[in-house]
Amino acid sequence: MKSVVELDINVGQAKVAELFTDPQRNPEWMDDVERIEPVGGDLGKPGSRYRLVPKQGNLTFVARIISRELPTEAKLILDAPSISVSVTGKFIALSEVSTRLVSEEIFIFKGIFWKLRGLFARGAIRGAHRRHMESFKRFAERQA
Image (cartoon, rainbow, N blue to C red; front, side, top):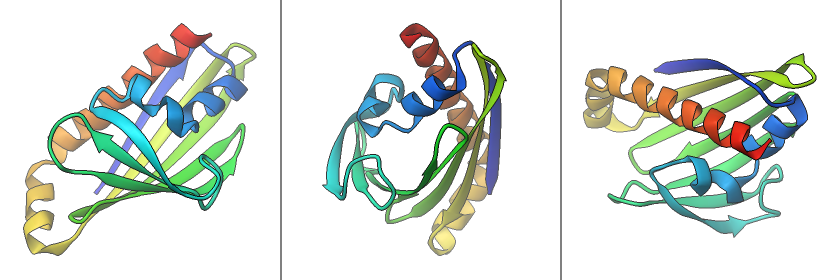
């Protein structure tokens, strides 16, 4: 399943890319993340891994940075026992003080049970993706 969210943010491209790709800032805008725990590598750099510890529940993702081609694009994989999510963030400069964020998430459910559950939860998953990106927009605009 694929979800794409596009938002215009009133912050310059370099700053948006920097904030979006800094794992230590994730708990500041991801309302369901309690903290991150470095697992390996130079945090935030390609190849590094970190754990996203949720505030509630037990669905803990391990994130692995695939690429950082700042200020234009970043890719990472979120992996949990039941699901993997490929995340691509694209940062398109609209002006010196405005950036279009295009966030693409591709969900791969593991096992027949999770595939069925994912099929029925498509709307909720897309809604959560949009809420996260709108939360990031508010966070980025407060930082500017």
